[in-house]
Length: 118
Image (cartoon, rainbow, N blue to C red; front, side):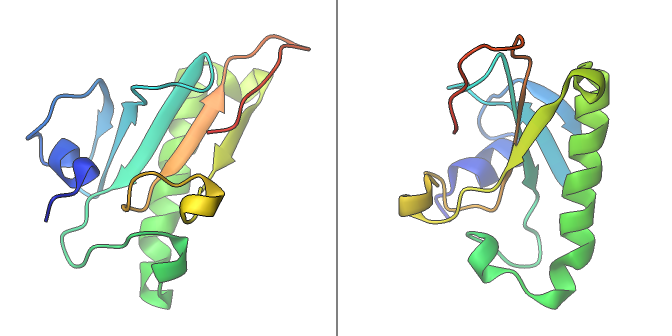
């Protein structure tokens, strides 16, 4: 499969890794839309999931792991006190550029600062 995120989580392409666990990886977005912009990306060993639209009930554990990793990253980057956004972009019309399920964590803005969405 020629998936950019599969290549990153399999360490075939470089990235600025924040966490690397058995089931997912957290790394910095190369085109950040916020002062802190991380991607929480599951490792797709059983089957490839392009987007939220492809989720099945058996994916509940993976989604929970993604949100818990986002919570940990937010705390480690000091965003748990100041606030942050979690975003799933779904489909091209929703801003999704890579067909591999992933969660954006955005934060680090100063109060009143203009914010962009990924």
